[in-house]
Length: 636
Image (cartoon, rainbow, N blue to C red):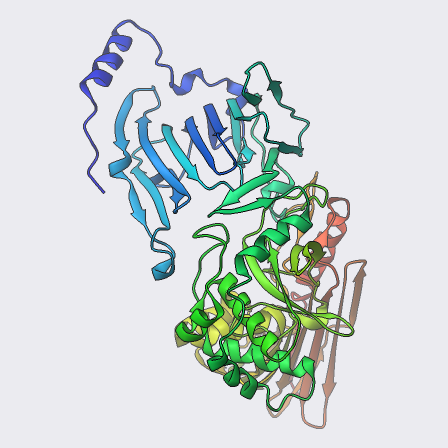
Protein backbone atom coordinates (compact mmCIF):
# COMPACT_ATOMS: atom_id res chain seq x y z
CA UNK A 1 0.00 0.00 0.00
CA UNK A 2 1.24 3.50 -0.82
CA UNK A 3 2.08 5.87 2.02
CA UNK A 4 -0.49 8.46 3.05
CA UNK A 5 -0.71 11.20 0.43
CA UNK A 6 -0.27 14.82 1.39
CA UNK A 7 -3.42 16.85 1.64
CA UNK A 8 -4.06 18.59 -1.64
CA UNK A 9 -3.39 22.29 -1.71
CA UNK A 10 -7.02 22.92 -2.64
CA UNK A 11 -8.34 21.08 0.41
CA UNK A 12 -5.85 22.80 2.67
CA UNK A 13 -6.66 26.28 1.35
CA UNK A 14 -10.37 25.50 1.58
CA UNK A 15 -10.16 24.45 5.23
CA UNK A 16 -8.00 27.47 6.13
CA UNK A 17 -10.44 29.87 4.48
CA UNK A 18 -13.34 28.28 6.31
CA UNK A 19 -11.48 28.49 9.61
CA UNK A 20 -10.53 32.15 9.05
CA UNK A 21 -14.13 32.99 8.29
CA UNK A 22 -15.14 31.40 11.58
CA UNK A 23 -17.37 28.83 9.88
CA UNK A 24 -17.88 25.31 11.14
CA UNK A 25 -16.79 22.78 8.53
CA UNK A 26 -19.56 20.55 7.08
CA UNK A 27 -18.30 17.29 8.65
CA UNK A 28 -17.49 18.68 12.09
CA UNK A 29 -18.67 16.34 14.82
CA UNK A 30 -20.25 19.30 16.62
CA UNK A 31 -22.92 19.44 13.88
CA UNK A 32 -24.28 15.97 14.71
CA UNK A 33 -27.62 16.30 16.54
CA UNK A 34 -27.09 15.34 20.21
CA UNK A 35 -29.80 12.67 20.15
CA UNK A 36 -27.94 10.80 17.39
CA UNK A 37 -24.85 10.48 19.58
CA UNK A 38 -26.67 8.59 22.32
CA UNK A 39 -25.45 4.95 22.52
CA UNK A 40 -23.85 5.39 19.08
CA UNK A 41 -20.43 4.14 18.02
CA UNK A 42 -20.91 5.64 14.57
CA UNK A 43 -23.19 8.05 12.73
CA UNK A 44 -24.15 7.92 9.05
CA UNK A 45 -23.96 11.60 8.19
CA UNK A 46 -24.87 11.17 4.55
CA UNK A 47 -25.43 8.16 2.33
CA UNK A 48 -26.55 8.02 -1.28
CA UNK A 49 -26.81 4.66 -3.06
CA UNK A 50 -27.78 4.54 -6.72
CA UNK A 51 -28.29 1.21 -8.46
CA UNK A 52 -29.17 1.52 -12.13
CA UNK A 53 -30.15 -1.42 -14.35
CA UNK A 54 -29.83 -1.14 -18.08
CA UNK A 55 -30.91 -4.72 -18.77
CA UNK A 56 -31.17 -8.08 -16.99
CA UNK A 57 -27.39 -8.47 -17.29
CA UNK A 58 -25.99 -4.90 -17.15
CA UNK A 59 -26.04 -2.52 -14.20
CA UNK A 60 -24.03 0.05 -12.30
CA UNK A 61 -23.76 0.92 -8.63
CA UNK A 62 -22.62 4.29 -7.29
CA UNK A 63 -22.14 4.97 -3.59
CA UNK A 64 -21.39 8.18 -1.73
CA UNK A 65 -21.18 7.83 2.04
CA UNK A 66 -19.97 9.90 4.96
CA UNK A 67 -19.71 8.09 8.30
CA UNK A 68 -18.37 9.50 11.57
CA UNK A 69 -16.86 7.02 14.04
CA UNK A 70 -17.26 8.49 17.49
CA UNK A 71 -15.13 6.00 19.40
CA UNK A 72 -13.22 2.78 18.97
CA UNK A 73 -10.23 0.92 20.26
CA UNK A 74 -8.75 0.30 16.83
CA UNK A 75 -5.51 1.98 15.82
CA UNK A 76 -6.34 0.99 12.23
CA UNK A 77 -9.81 1.52 10.80
CA UNK A 78 -11.29 -0.25 7.78
CA UNK A 79 -12.25 2.64 5.54
CA UNK A 80 -13.23 0.64 2.47
CA UNK A 81 -13.99 -2.93 1.44
CA UNK A 82 -15.48 -4.36 -1.73
CA UNK A 83 -15.09 -7.52 -3.78
CA UNK A 84 -14.87 -8.02 -7.50
CA UNK A 85 -14.92 -10.99 -9.86
CA UNK A 86 -15.57 -11.43 -13.54
CA UNK A 87 -19.14 -10.18 -13.04
CA UNK A 88 -18.27 -7.08 -11.01
CA UNK A 89 -15.65 -4.44 -11.85
CA UNK A 90 -14.57 -1.72 -9.45
CA UNK A 91 -14.50 1.79 -10.89
CA UNK A 92 -12.82 4.90 -9.50
CA UNK A 93 -12.47 5.17 -5.74
CA UNK A 94 -12.06 8.29 -3.61
CA UNK A 95 -11.65 8.09 0.17
CA UNK A 96 -11.16 11.14 2.38
CA UNK A 97 -10.47 11.21 6.10
CA UNK A 98 -11.49 14.13 8.36
CA UNK A 99 -10.74 14.94 12.00
CA UNK A 100 -13.26 15.89 14.71
CA UNK A 101 -13.42 19.48 13.45
CA UNK A 102 -14.11 18.33 9.90
CA UNK A 103 -10.67 19.23 8.62
CA UNK A 104 -9.27 16.93 5.89
CA UNK A 105 -6.47 14.74 7.17
CA UNK A 106 -5.67 12.37 4.30
CA UNK A 107 -6.93 11.20 0.95
CA UNK A 108 -6.71 7.88 -0.91
CA UNK A 109 -7.53 6.58 -4.36
CA UNK A 110 -8.05 3.21 -6.01
CA UNK A 111 -4.32 2.63 -6.41
CA UNK A 112 -3.90 2.84 -2.63
CA UNK A 113 -6.20 -0.14 -2.00
CA UNK A 114 -4.94 -3.54 -0.93
CA UNK A 115 -6.19 -6.21 -3.35
CA UNK A 116 -5.99 -9.85 -2.40
CA UNK A 117 -7.33 -13.12 -3.72
CA UNK A 118 -9.01 -14.94 -0.84
CA UNK A 119 -10.01 -17.91 -2.90
CA UNK A 120 -6.61 -19.53 -3.54
CA UNK A 121 -5.91 -20.81 -7.04
CA UNK A 122 -9.49 -21.84 -7.79
CA UNK A 123 -10.81 -18.39 -8.72
CA UNK A 124 -7.88 -16.28 -9.89
CA UNK A 125 -10.12 -13.34 -10.85
CA UNK A 126 -11.88 -13.09 -7.46
CA UNK A 127 -10.43 -10.12 -5.56
CA UNK A 128 -11.09 -8.52 -2.20
CA UNK A 129 -10.26 -4.81 -2.15
CA UNK A 130 -9.80 -2.97 1.13
CA UNK A 131 -8.18 -0.02 2.81
CA UNK A 132 -7.20 0.41 6.43
CA UNK A 133 -6.24 3.84 7.68
CA UNK A 134 -4.30 4.75 10.83
CA UNK A 135 -6.30 6.38 13.62
CA UNK A 136 -4.46 8.63 16.04
CA UNK A 137 -7.53 10.01 17.75
CA UNK A 138 -11.30 9.59 17.65
CA UNK A 139 -13.71 10.84 16.38
CA UNK A 140 -12.85 10.51 12.69
CA UNK A 141 -15.03 10.85 9.62
CA UNK A 142 -14.61 8.76 6.46
CA UNK A 143 -16.05 9.89 3.15
CA UNK A 144 -16.22 7.31 0.32
CA UNK A 145 -17.11 7.67 -3.33
CA UNK A 146 -16.90 4.67 -5.63
CA UNK A 147 -18.66 2.76 -8.36
CA UNK A 148 -19.12 -0.85 -9.47
CA UNK A 149 -20.16 -2.03 -12.93
CA UNK A 150 -22.00 -5.34 -13.38
CA UNK A 151 -21.59 -7.63 -16.36
CA UNK A 152 -24.10 -10.23 -15.27
CA UNK A 153 -26.69 -9.41 -12.62
CA UNK A 154 -27.96 -12.00 -10.16
CA UNK A 155 -28.69 -10.20 -6.89
CA UNK A 156 -29.69 -6.58 -6.41
CA UNK A 157 -28.04 -4.74 -3.49
CA UNK A 158 -30.30 -4.78 -0.44
CA UNK A 159 -30.89 -1.56 1.43
CA UNK A 160 -29.13 -2.03 4.76
CA UNK A 161 -29.28 1.46 6.23
CA UNK A 162 -28.33 0.89 9.86
CA UNK A 163 -25.73 -1.18 11.68
CA UNK A 164 -25.54 -2.03 15.35
CA UNK A 165 -24.96 1.01 17.59
CA UNK A 166 -25.16 3.27 14.55
CA UNK A 167 -27.45 6.25 14.16
CA UNK A 168 -28.47 7.66 10.79
CA UNK A 169 -28.67 11.34 9.92
CA UNK A 170 -29.58 10.99 6.24
CA UNK A 171 -29.61 7.98 3.93
CA UNK A 172 -31.28 7.22 0.62
CA UNK A 173 -31.32 4.41 -1.91
CA UNK A 174 -32.29 5.07 -5.51
CA UNK A 175 -32.99 2.21 -7.89
CA UNK A 176 -33.66 2.78 -11.59
CA UNK A 177 -34.61 0.06 -14.11
CA UNK A 178 -36.29 -0.20 -17.52
CA UNK A 179 -40.08 -0.17 -17.34
CA UNK A 180 -40.34 -3.60 -18.92
CA UNK A 181 -38.42 -5.11 -15.98
CA UNK A 182 -40.18 -6.15 -12.79
CA UNK A 183 -38.81 -5.22 -9.35
CA UNK A 184 -39.68 -7.06 -6.15
CA UNK A 185 -39.05 -5.59 -2.70
CA UNK A 186 -40.15 -6.21 0.87
CA UNK A 187 -39.49 -4.09 3.98
CA UNK A 188 -38.09 -6.14 6.88
CA UNK A 189 -38.56 -5.02 10.50
CA UNK A 190 -39.78 -1.68 9.16
CA UNK A 191 -42.75 -0.12 7.36
CA UNK A 192 -40.52 1.86 4.99
CA UNK A 193 -41.96 2.15 1.47
CA UNK A 194 -40.40 3.71 -1.64
CA UNK A 195 -41.50 6.71 -3.64
CA UNK A 196 -42.06 5.43 -7.18
CA UNK A 197 -41.55 7.72 -10.17
CA UNK A 198 -42.72 6.69 -13.67
CA UNK A 199 -42.44 10.09 -15.32
CA UNK A 200 -39.49 8.98 -17.45
CA UNK A 201 -40.53 7.44 -20.77
CA UNK A 202 -38.14 4.51 -20.54
CA UNK A 203 -37.34 3.92 -16.86
CA UNK A 204 -39.05 3.53 -13.52
CA UNK A 205 -37.33 4.74 -10.35
CA UNK A 206 -37.71 3.83 -6.68
CA UNK A 207 -36.44 5.93 -3.81
CA UNK A 208 -36.20 4.90 -0.15
CA UNK A 209 -35.17 7.58 2.36
CA UNK A 210 -34.55 7.56 6.10
CA UNK A 211 -33.35 10.26 8.48
CA UNK A 212 -32.82 10.95 12.17
CA UNK A 213 -32.70 7.29 13.23
CA UNK A 214 -31.34 6.82 16.77
CA UNK A 215 -28.76 4.14 17.47
CA UNK A 216 -30.00 0.65 18.24
CA UNK A 217 -28.24 -2.27 19.92
CA UNK A 218 -28.36 -5.98 19.22
CA UNK A 219 -28.91 -7.77 22.51
CA UNK A 220 -26.30 -10.46 23.31
CA UNK A 221 -27.18 -13.82 21.77
CA UNK A 222 -29.98 -12.38 19.64
CA UNK A 223 -28.85 -13.95 16.38
CA UNK A 224 -28.39 -12.15 13.05
CA UNK A 225 -29.02 -8.43 12.69
CA UNK A 226 -31.33 -9.14 9.71
CA UNK A 227 -33.91 -10.54 12.12
CA UNK A 228 -33.92 -7.44 14.32
CA UNK A 229 -32.70 -4.36 12.44
CA UNK A 230 -34.64 -2.57 9.69
CA UNK A 231 -33.71 -3.18 6.06
CA UNK A 232 -35.33 -3.57 2.66
CA UNK A 233 -35.08 -6.83 0.74
CA UNK A 234 -34.79 -6.18 -3.00
CA UNK A 235 -34.71 -8.88 -5.68
CA UNK A 236 -35.08 -9.36 -9.42
CA UNK A 237 -37.59 -11.49 -11.24
CA UNK A 238 -35.67 -12.11 -14.45
CA UNK A 239 -31.89 -12.11 -14.28
CA UNK A 240 -28.85 -13.32 -16.21
CA UNK A 241 -25.45 -14.47 -14.97
CA UNK A 242 -22.61 -15.81 -17.06
CA UNK A 243 -24.89 -16.10 -20.06
CA UNK A 244 -27.44 -18.20 -18.18
CA UNK A 245 -30.86 -16.46 -18.02
CA UNK A 246 -32.99 -17.23 -14.98
CA UNK A 247 -36.24 -16.44 -13.25
CA UNK A 248 -36.66 -15.83 -9.52
CA UNK A 249 -40.40 -15.29 -9.39
CA UNK A 250 -40.75 -18.59 -7.49
CA UNK A 251 -38.45 -21.10 -5.78
CA UNK A 252 -39.17 -23.75 -8.41
CA UNK A 253 -37.86 -21.70 -11.33
CA UNK A 254 -34.92 -20.49 -9.27
CA UNK A 255 -33.88 -24.11 -8.72
CA UNK A 256 -34.31 -24.93 -12.41
CA UNK A 257 -31.84 -22.17 -13.22
CA UNK A 258 -29.20 -23.80 -11.03
CA UNK A 259 -29.90 -27.18 -12.62
CA UNK A 260 -29.05 -25.67 -15.99
CA UNK A 261 -25.60 -24.77 -14.65
CA UNK A 262 -24.64 -28.23 -13.44
CA UNK A 263 -26.38 -30.63 -15.81
CA UNK A 264 -23.19 -31.48 -17.73
CA UNK A 265 -20.81 -31.52 -14.78
CA UNK A 266 -22.44 -33.78 -12.20
CA UNK A 267 -21.45 -37.15 -13.65
CA UNK A 268 -18.20 -39.06 -13.25
CA UNK A 269 -16.45 -40.45 -16.30
CA UNK A 270 -16.28 -44.19 -16.73
CA UNK A 271 -12.62 -44.28 -15.68
CA UNK A 272 -13.51 -43.13 -12.15
CA UNK A 273 -16.80 -44.98 -11.67
CA UNK A 274 -15.11 -48.29 -10.89
CA UNK A 275 -13.25 -46.67 -7.99
CA UNK A 276 -16.53 -45.53 -6.41
CA UNK A 277 -18.12 -48.94 -6.88
CA UNK A 278 -15.20 -50.46 -5.01
CA UNK A 279 -15.80 -48.06 -2.11
CA UNK A 280 -19.32 -49.47 -1.56
CA UNK A 281 -18.52 -53.08 -2.37
CA UNK A 282 -19.31 -54.19 1.18
CA UNK A 283 -22.31 -51.92 1.69
CA UNK A 284 -25.38 -53.95 2.65
CA UNK A 285 -28.01 -51.32 1.77
CA UNK A 286 -28.32 -47.79 0.42
CA UNK A 287 -28.04 -46.24 3.87
CA UNK A 288 -24.69 -47.93 4.47
CA UNK A 289 -23.47 -47.12 0.96
CA UNK A 290 -24.19 -43.43 1.51
CA UNK A 291 -22.11 -43.50 4.70
CA UNK A 292 -19.24 -45.30 2.97
CA UNK A 293 -19.10 -42.77 0.11
CA UNK A 294 -19.41 -39.87 2.55
CA UNK A 295 -16.54 -41.23 4.63
CA UNK A 296 -14.48 -41.71 1.46
CA UNK A 297 -15.04 -38.04 0.65
CA UNK A 298 -14.07 -36.94 4.16
CA UNK A 299 -10.83 -38.92 4.20
CA UNK A 300 -9.58 -38.09 0.72
CA UNK A 301 -10.76 -34.61 -0.25
CA UNK A 302 -9.85 -31.16 0.98
CA UNK A 303 -12.17 -28.21 1.40
CA UNK A 304 -11.11 -24.86 -0.08
CA UNK A 305 -13.29 -21.84 0.68
CA UNK A 306 -15.08 -20.09 -2.17
CA UNK A 307 -18.33 -18.57 -0.92
CA UNK A 308 -21.54 -18.96 -2.87
CA UNK A 309 -22.02 -15.98 -5.12
CA UNK A 310 -18.29 -15.18 -5.37
CA UNK A 311 -16.33 -16.73 -8.19
CA UNK A 312 -19.51 -17.91 -9.92
CA UNK A 313 -22.20 -20.47 -9.14
CA UNK A 314 -21.17 -23.14 -11.57
CA UNK A 315 -19.31 -25.83 -9.60
CA UNK A 316 -16.18 -27.58 -10.79
CA UNK A 317 -16.96 -30.78 -12.61
CA UNK A 318 -17.02 -34.07 -10.74
CA UNK A 319 -14.03 -35.30 -12.76
CA UNK A 320 -12.04 -32.17 -11.86
CA UNK A 321 -12.67 -32.69 -8.14
CA UNK A 322 -11.85 -36.40 -8.38
CA UNK A 323 -8.48 -35.62 -9.94
CA UNK A 324 -7.54 -32.60 -7.79
CA UNK A 325 -8.93 -33.92 -4.49
CA UNK A 326 -10.23 -30.50 -3.42
CA UNK A 327 -13.17 -28.18 -3.91
CA UNK A 328 -15.47 -25.66 -2.30
CA UNK A 329 -18.89 -26.51 -0.86
CA UNK A 330 -20.52 -26.46 -4.32
CA UNK A 331 -17.82 -28.61 -5.92
CA UNK A 332 -17.70 -31.18 -3.11
CA UNK A 333 -21.50 -31.43 -2.97
CA UNK A 334 -21.68 -31.84 -6.74
CA UNK A 335 -18.96 -34.50 -6.58
CA UNK A 336 -20.71 -36.42 -3.80
CA UNK A 337 -23.91 -36.46 -5.84
CA UNK A 338 -21.98 -37.81 -8.83
CA UNK A 339 -20.56 -40.60 -6.65
CA UNK A 340 -23.99 -41.49 -5.31
CA UNK A 341 -25.45 -41.61 -8.81
CA UNK A 342 -22.81 -44.22 -9.74
CA UNK A 343 -24.53 -46.64 -7.33
CA UNK A 344 -28.03 -45.45 -8.29
CA UNK A 345 -28.74 -43.45 -5.14
CA UNK A 346 -30.78 -40.31 -5.69
CA UNK A 347 -29.61 -37.11 -3.98
CA UNK A 348 -30.10 -33.35 -4.13
CA UNK A 349 -27.95 -30.33 -3.45
CA UNK A 350 -29.38 -27.75 -1.07
CA UNK A 351 -28.50 -24.10 -0.49
CA UNK A 352 -28.33 -22.89 3.10
CA UNK A 353 -27.61 -19.70 5.01
CA UNK A 354 -24.83 -21.21 7.13
CA UNK A 355 -23.37 -19.90 10.37
CA UNK A 356 -23.93 -20.55 14.05
CA UNK A 357 -25.49 -17.08 14.41
CA UNK A 358 -27.15 -16.96 10.99
CA UNK A 359 -30.67 -18.21 11.69
CA UNK A 360 -32.01 -15.76 9.12
CA UNK A 361 -35.78 -15.82 8.66
CA UNK A 362 -36.41 -16.61 5.00
CA UNK A 363 -39.70 -15.41 3.57
CA UNK A 364 -41.27 -18.38 1.76
CA UNK A 365 -43.47 -16.05 -0.30
CA UNK A 366 -40.54 -13.90 -1.45
CA UNK A 367 -37.93 -15.90 -3.41
CA UNK A 368 -34.46 -14.38 -3.16
CA UNK A 369 -30.94 -15.54 -2.40
CA UNK A 370 -29.61 -15.15 1.16
CA UNK A 371 -27.64 -18.40 0.85
CA UNK A 372 -23.90 -18.82 1.36
CA UNK A 373 -23.36 -22.58 1.58
CA UNK A 374 -24.29 -25.85 -0.09
CA UNK A 375 -24.90 -29.34 1.35
CA UNK A 376 -26.38 -32.61 0.09
CA UNK A 377 -29.68 -34.25 1.00
CA UNK A 378 -30.29 -37.95 0.32
CA UNK A 379 -33.99 -38.97 0.49
CA UNK A 380 -34.26 -42.33 2.26
CA UNK A 381 -37.17 -44.64 2.88
CA UNK A 382 -38.00 -43.31 6.34
CA UNK A 383 -36.22 -39.97 6.45
CA UNK A 384 -33.71 -37.85 4.57
CA UNK A 385 -29.99 -38.07 5.28
CA UNK A 386 -28.23 -34.69 5.25
CA UNK A 387 -24.50 -34.50 4.51
CA UNK A 388 -22.08 -31.63 5.24
CA UNK A 389 -19.45 -32.15 2.55
CA UNK A 390 -16.92 -29.64 3.89
CA UNK A 391 -16.49 -31.33 7.29
CA UNK A 392 -13.86 -34.07 7.67
CA UNK A 393 -15.36 -35.33 10.94
CA UNK A 394 -19.17 -34.88 11.08
CA UNK A 395 -21.26 -38.03 11.23
CA UNK A 396 -23.47 -38.72 8.22
CA UNK A 397 -26.86 -37.17 8.91
CA UNK A 398 -25.68 -34.65 11.51
CA UNK A 399 -26.34 -30.98 10.93
CA UNK A 400 -24.40 -28.93 13.48
CA UNK A 401 -24.79 -25.34 14.65
CA UNK A 402 -23.45 -24.22 11.26
CA UNK A 403 -26.38 -25.63 9.24
CA UNK A 404 -29.07 -27.07 11.53
CA UNK A 405 -32.75 -26.12 11.76
CA UNK A 406 -33.09 -23.51 9.03
CA UNK A 407 -34.64 -23.10 5.62
CA UNK A 408 -32.78 -24.64 2.70
CA UNK A 409 -33.50 -24.53 -1.01
CA UNK A 410 -33.59 -28.14 -2.14
CA UNK A 411 -32.51 -28.29 -5.80
CA UNK A 412 -34.56 -31.14 -7.24
CA UNK A 413 -34.94 -32.28 -10.83
CA UNK A 414 -38.26 -30.41 -10.86
CA UNK A 415 -36.81 -27.18 -9.49
CA UNK A 416 -36.29 -25.54 -6.12
CA UNK A 417 -38.26 -26.54 -3.01
CA UNK A 418 -37.95 -24.68 0.28
CA UNK A 419 -37.47 -27.17 3.14
CA UNK A 420 -36.03 -27.12 6.64
CA UNK A 421 -32.85 -28.86 7.74
CA UNK A 422 -33.07 -31.18 10.77
CA UNK A 423 -32.69 -29.87 14.29
CA UNK A 424 -30.40 -32.10 16.38
CA UNK A 425 -31.77 -33.59 19.55
CA UNK A 426 -29.79 -33.37 22.80
CA UNK A 427 -28.72 -37.00 22.26
CA UNK A 428 -27.07 -36.01 18.97
CA UNK A 429 -25.00 -33.29 20.60
CA UNK A 430 -23.60 -34.62 23.84
CA UNK A 431 -20.45 -34.50 25.93
CA UNK A 432 -19.88 -37.14 28.61
CA UNK A 433 -17.05 -36.77 31.14
CA UNK A 434 -15.84 -39.34 33.66
CA UNK A 435 -13.01 -38.21 35.97
CA UNK A 436 -11.22 -40.38 38.55
CA UNK A 437 -9.02 -38.60 41.10
CA UNK A 438 -6.61 -40.41 43.40
CA UNK A 439 -6.41 -37.96 46.29
CA UNK A 440 -3.40 -37.74 48.59
CA UNK A 441 -3.54 -36.58 52.19
CA UNK A 442 -2.38 -33.07 51.29
CA UNK A 443 -5.06 -32.66 48.59
CA UNK A 444 -2.76 -33.32 45.64
CA UNK A 445 -3.17 -36.29 43.35
CA UNK A 446 -3.50 -37.67 39.86
CA UNK A 447 -6.59 -37.73 37.66
CA UNK A 448 -7.62 -39.74 34.65
CA UNK A 449 -10.40 -38.33 32.49
CA UNK A 450 -12.37 -40.21 29.86
CA UNK A 451 -14.61 -38.20 27.51
CA UNK A 452 -16.97 -39.26 24.76
CA UNK A 453 -18.84 -36.89 22.47
CA UNK A 454 -20.82 -36.43 19.30
CA UNK A 455 -22.24 -33.53 17.35
CA UNK A 456 -20.49 -30.18 17.67
CA UNK A 457 -18.52 -31.42 20.68
CA UNK A 458 -17.04 -34.26 18.64
CA UNK A 459 -16.05 -31.82 15.90
CA UNK A 460 -14.21 -29.70 18.47
CA UNK A 461 -12.16 -32.66 19.68
CA UNK A 462 -11.41 -34.25 16.32
CA UNK A 463 -11.13 -31.27 14.03
CA UNK A 464 -9.42 -28.74 16.29
CA UNK A 465 -8.24 -29.97 19.65
CA UNK A 466 -6.48 -33.17 18.54
CA UNK A 467 -4.29 -31.18 16.14
CA UNK A 468 -3.22 -28.52 18.64
CA UNK A 469 0.01 -28.34 20.61
CA UNK A 470 -0.01 -29.66 24.17
CA UNK A 471 -0.13 -26.21 25.76
CA UNK A 472 -3.08 -25.24 23.55
CA UNK A 473 -4.89 -28.44 24.52
CA UNK A 474 -4.35 -27.69 28.20
CA UNK A 475 -5.63 -24.15 27.75
CA UNK A 476 -8.77 -25.50 26.05
CA UNK A 477 -9.42 -27.89 28.94
CA UNK A 478 -9.11 -25.14 31.52
CA UNK A 479 -10.66 -22.14 29.75
CA UNK A 480 -13.30 -23.82 27.56
CA UNK A 481 -14.12 -27.09 29.31
CA UNK A 482 -13.65 -25.47 32.75
CA UNK A 483 -11.49 -28.12 34.42
CA UNK A 484 -9.50 -27.26 37.53
CA UNK A 485 -6.08 -26.22 36.21
CA UNK A 486 -3.64 -29.17 36.37
CA UNK A 487 0.13 -29.01 36.77
CA UNK A 488 0.85 -31.91 34.43
CA UNK A 489 -1.29 -32.75 31.42
CA UNK A 490 -1.38 -35.17 28.48
CA UNK A 491 -4.17 -36.01 26.06
CA UNK A 492 -4.93 -38.55 23.33
CA UNK A 493 -7.94 -38.70 20.99
CA UNK A 494 -9.04 -41.92 19.32
CA UNK A 495 -10.05 -40.66 15.88
CA UNK A 496 -11.50 -44.04 14.92
CA UNK A 497 -13.93 -44.11 17.84
CA UNK A 498 -17.53 -43.17 16.87
CA UNK A 499 -17.76 -40.99 19.99
CA UNK A 500 -14.24 -39.49 19.68
CA UNK A 501 -13.00 -41.19 22.85
CA UNK A 502 -10.57 -38.77 24.53
CA UNK A 503 -8.24 -39.87 27.33
CA UNK A 504 -6.55 -37.32 29.58
CA UNK A 505 -4.00 -37.82 32.33
CA UNK A 506 -3.48 -34.97 34.78
CA UNK A 507 -1.87 -34.26 38.12
CA UNK A 508 -2.22 -31.29 40.45
CA UNK A 509 -0.89 -30.20 43.80
CA UNK A 510 -4.32 -28.82 44.67
CA UNK A 511 -7.57 -30.55 43.71
CA UNK A 512 -9.44 -28.92 46.59
CA UNK A 513 -10.94 -25.43 46.85
CA UNK A 514 -9.49 -24.73 50.31
CA UNK A 515 -8.57 -26.56 53.50
CA UNK A 516 -8.66 -25.83 57.20
CA UNK A 517 -7.27 -27.96 59.96
CA UNK A 518 -7.58 -31.57 58.89
CA UNK A 519 -10.46 -30.90 56.51
CA UNK A 520 -10.42 -30.57 52.70
CA UNK A 521 -13.21 -28.67 50.95
CA UNK A 522 -13.67 -30.16 47.48
CA UNK A 523 -15.65 -28.98 44.50
CA UNK A 524 -18.54 -31.31 43.68
CA UNK A 525 -16.73 -32.11 40.42
CA UNK A 526 -13.35 -31.16 38.93
CA UNK A 527 -15.00 -29.28 36.08
CA UNK A 528 -17.91 -26.89 35.88
CA UNK A 529 -20.59 -28.50 33.77
CA UNK A 530 -21.81 -25.00 32.86
CA UNK A 531 -19.81 -21.80 33.17
CA UNK A 532 -21.25 -19.41 30.59
CA UNK A 533 -23.17 -16.63 32.38
CA UNK A 534 -26.18 -15.65 30.32
CA UNK A 535 -26.76 -11.95 29.58
CA UNK A 536 -29.03 -9.93 31.85
CA UNK A 537 -32.73 -10.53 31.42
CA UNK A 538 -34.21 -7.18 32.46
CA UNK A 539 -36.23 -5.54 29.67
CA UNK A 540 -35.12 -8.12 27.09
CA UNK A 541 -37.01 -7.68 23.79
CA UNK A 542 -35.05 -9.95 21.42
CA UNK A 543 -35.02 -13.75 21.29
CA UNK A 544 -31.96 -15.61 22.55
CA UNK A 545 -30.12 -18.39 20.70
CA UNK A 546 -27.90 -21.12 22.11
CA UNK A 547 -25.81 -22.94 19.50
CA UNK A 548 -27.75 -26.22 19.68
CA UNK A 549 -29.72 -28.41 22.07
CA UNK A 550 -27.32 -30.53 24.13
CA UNK A 551 -26.84 -33.26 26.72
CA UNK A 552 -23.95 -32.84 29.16
CA UNK A 553 -23.06 -35.44 31.78
CA UNK A 554 -20.27 -35.28 34.30
CA UNK A 555 -19.15 -37.88 36.83
CA UNK A 556 -16.29 -37.19 39.22
CA UNK A 557 -15.03 -40.00 41.43
CA UNK A 558 -12.77 -39.04 44.34
CA UNK A 559 -10.76 -41.94 45.79
CA UNK A 560 -10.05 -40.81 49.37
CA UNK A 561 -6.68 -41.44 50.99
CA UNK A 562 -6.41 -43.93 53.84
CA UNK A 563 -7.85 -42.58 57.08
CA UNK A 564 -10.22 -40.05 55.45
CA UNK A 565 -14.01 -40.02 55.41
CA UNK A 566 -16.66 -37.58 54.15
CA UNK A 567 -18.03 -35.18 56.72
CA UNK A 568 -20.52 -33.36 54.48
CA UNK A 569 -21.96 -34.31 51.10
CA UNK A 570 -24.22 -31.99 49.07
CA UNK A 571 -27.79 -33.17 48.78
CA UNK A 572 -29.30 -34.39 45.54
CA UNK A 573 -30.63 -31.61 43.32
CA UNK A 574 -33.26 -31.58 40.62
CA UNK A 575 -34.26 -28.50 38.62
CA UNK A 576 -36.56 -28.22 35.63
CA UNK A 577 -37.50 -25.57 33.14
CA UNK A 578 -39.68 -26.02 30.05
CA UNK A 579 -36.49 -25.76 28.00
CA UNK A 580 -34.16 -27.90 30.10
CA UNK A 581 -33.41 -29.91 33.21
CA UNK A 582 -30.54 -30.38 35.66
CA UNK A 583 -29.93 -33.07 38.25
CA UNK A 584 -27.06 -33.92 40.60
CA UNK A 585 -26.30 -36.62 43.13
CA UNK A 586 -23.38 -37.26 45.48
CA UNK A 587 -22.88 -40.55 47.35
CA UNK A 588 -20.13 -42.35 49.29
CA UNK A 589 -19.04 -45.94 48.78
CA UNK A 590 -17.19 -46.94 51.98
CA UNK A 591 -16.00 -50.26 50.55
CA UNK A 592 -13.48 -48.56 48.24
CA UNK A 593 -13.46 -45.08 49.87
CA UNK A 594 -14.96 -43.40 46.78
CA UNK A 595 -17.18 -40.34 46.58
CA UNK A 596 -19.17 -40.45 43.34
CA UNK A 597 -20.59 -37.11 42.21
CA UNK A 598 -22.80 -36.99 39.11
CA UNK A 599 -24.50 -34.20 37.16
CA UNK A 600 -26.69 -34.16 34.06
CA UNK A 601 -27.65 -30.99 32.17
CA UNK A 602 -30.10 -31.09 29.24
CA UNK A 603 -31.12 -28.23 26.96
CA UNK A 604 -34.10 -29.29 24.84
CA UNK A 605 -34.48 -26.16 22.71
CA UNK A 606 -31.82 -23.73 21.52
CA UNK A 607 -34.16 -20.89 20.45
CA UNK A 608 -35.56 -19.06 23.46
CA UNK A 609 -38.33 -16.48 22.90
CA UNK A 610 -37.69 -13.15 24.60
CA UNK A 611 -40.78 -13.66 26.81
CA UNK A 612 -39.28 -16.91 28.18
CA UNK A 613 -35.69 -15.78 28.52
CA UNK A 614 -35.83 -14.60 32.16
CA UNK A 615 -36.87 -18.07 33.31
CA UNK A 616 -34.11 -19.73 31.31
CA UNK A 617 -31.49 -17.35 32.68
CA UNK A 618 -32.65 -18.05 36.24
CA UNK A 619 -32.36 -21.79 35.54
CA UNK A 620 -28.78 -21.54 34.28
CA UNK A 621 -27.80 -19.18 37.10
CA UNK A 622 -28.93 -21.88 39.53
CA UNK A 623 -26.92 -24.49 37.64
CA UNK A 624 -23.82 -22.36 38.05
CA UNK A 625 -24.52 -21.72 41.72
CA UNK A 626 -24.68 -25.46 42.46
CA UNK A 627 -20.96 -25.74 41.79
CA UNK A 628 -20.31 -23.54 44.83
CA UNK A 629 -21.53 -26.29 47.17
CA UNK A 630 -18.72 -28.25 48.78
CA UNK A 631 -17.81 -31.82 49.61
CA UNK A 632 -16.02 -31.80 52.98
CA UNK A 633 -13.71 -34.67 53.91
CA UNK A 634 -11.72 -35.13 57.13
CA UNK A 635 -9.46 -37.55 58.89
CA UNK A 636 -11.09 -40.26 60.93
